[in-house]
Image (cartoon, rainbow, N blue to C red):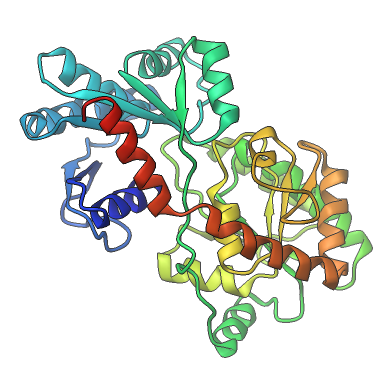
Amino acid sequence: MHTLSLAEAMGERGMPVRVVSLGDPAQGFYRPVRAPYTLVPAPEPRATLEERVFASVDALEQGLASIADEVDIFHTQDCISARAAARVRDSGADVRVVRTVHHVDDFTTNALIECQRQAILEPDQLVVVSQDWRTRLHADYGRTAVVIHNGVDATRFPPIEPACRDALRHQLGLSDRFIFLAVGGIEPRKGSVYLLQAMTILAKELDPAPALVVIGGHSFQDYSSYRDDALAMLPDLGLELGRDVILAGTVSDAALHVYYRSADALAFPSVKEGWGLAVLEAMTADLPVVASDIPVLHEYLTDHETAVLTRVGDPQSLADGLREVVTNAALRARLVEGGRSLVPEFSWERAAREHQMLYAENGG
């Protein structure tokens, strides 16, 4: 989302830009892209995460090498593309490697930890999307980064017809229940277990109990063990999969629009984020937000004005915040208005302008 939206905004400013990504050239991206792009065929699936990462680096290196004489800057967005671009540069290509570090993954093998470290040390310049990660990179890696905040498309999720909203809620079997939406699948970074524990607290206190709909789950890393363990908790928590917790999976952009506009609030109890783009997306859909109080979210959220902030990793605190949003209509209205006021501060046009200035400062 960051890459495609930023590239489109750059193109609208007249900047020569091309998106390069691993993928299926015949299938394309998950949505239409208003910018030139090249899809490098992704390698065949590998058995382990290490094998997938290193095969992906090799494949993307070949794709970037084929266009290196046409560009001045490789602006990379993750560990894989940063390593691939640095290899092309170090092989003699006259390109500058810039990397946006959205967050640092919690790899567990020495090979992947070292790969990630090199992907932070090798680029010529680093960009981060929050001050929190600027501080972390300097402390942990001795690198200085430029902060360029994420943007959001304020028009991406406009209002939908009430009948469309009612149809989805009926399809989910949740017509008469308060729906919390969680975006990002079930994984450790999203605080999913804490959210399930908070939902069971509410199920004992509220009638009807609120429901949770989880969007997403597709990830380069394999979180199936964490997800399976989390879902195995449901019976003991008194929650039923398909009734109280619904896994919608990876959905199209059009379907995501309907989900955002059909839910009642966003639950975002992450324990680690680079920025938390789903928070701003929810605000464009007029959803009140309940989030964790991690430092990065404090950079742009104000408790009980733009979101209800709860203690990170604390199911009771999270339940208290969720309950307050369910039961307090005036608070929900205040949060929606707060979100509407906040969204215009974060546009992709601004992000593209700041990138253009960054490139110019370094001769790009």
